[in-house]
Length: 90
Image 1 (cartoon, rainbow, N blue to C red):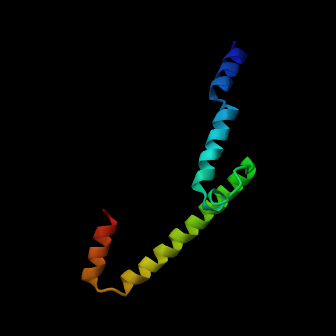
Image 2 (spheres, one colour):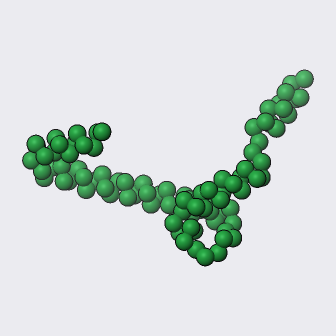
Image 3 (cartoon, rainbow, N blue to C red):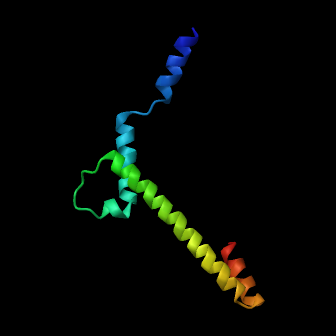
């Protein structure tokens, strides 16, 4: 009985090949490196690799912008810094 239950649970939690292809296609449209290519045929593994690289680059960009903002706020008078912080918290 428990093996039957586990088989049922496995089959309902599995994602179909069509769903995977759809998700990979959606990712492909979000990635500038792949989206701008003329060829429509890109392997799923390449899309996943590019997705990881793109997310890493976005993290680096966020870190860089955060550092630059911190420096800006340190070099700004307190009234302007307060205004900037209030705008950012909205």
